[in-house]
Length: 101
Image (cartoon, rainbow, N blue to C red):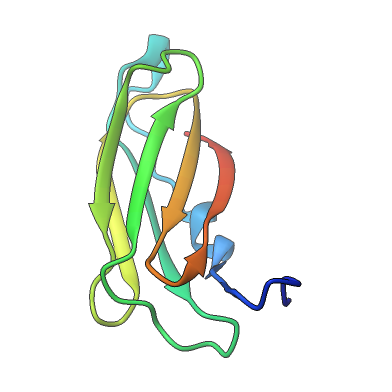
């Protein structure tokens, strides 16, 4: 997918979002886990992409991590509920996804 301004687009492998683990998720408590991979439009990994998790319910609650040299990232310890996952990397357009933990 190309954007008119010529920027590359970050492609997130959302299939891995289906691997969310649930443990004690009642009432916003829990140890939810999200993981994924950040790739460019050609399928190449993007290293040092910033991944930010922001609670939809408590918008001042957020966590972040970065992708490794293979584009992989993981975060453990998210409470249950809806989260907005934002991915940014220098030279790329940002990508967003909302997911339920």
